[in-house]
Length: 181
Image (cartoon, rainbow, N blue to C red):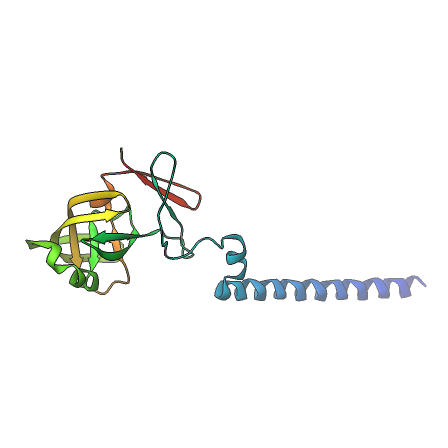
């Protein structure tokens, strides 16, 4: 009788092991599916889009921007009426325009007749140094913003410190707030 109970217990252990293994595999598969579908991410962070159609203001007057699904903050600035989408990059010394965006606003760029060298995580790059006569984000306007035009391909222009230096900005959770000093 004891041998029979030991045999049953051994079988129960095997069954529990295989059930546990199946559950772990299913969890990993479900997690992998979520990486491609963002099902759980969208459930908990459904308000986080990659673009923001309108700017919301805090009671202190700061402009609020929400984190995109890829973890970055994107802000659309108007340059003489032309909307340009920027990725907020506090590690970028200057505003950096993609060649495509620079073409859209070429009449509003002052070329400073020199190239500027930047040392980035991806190596050293040279870019055309320019000045943007006016950039507007919501109610905030900055004139004569130093920028560069990157001739290498880039997906999104960068909103760097040559613009952000004129503002008090902070991040709280999934919100970035931009305000004047």
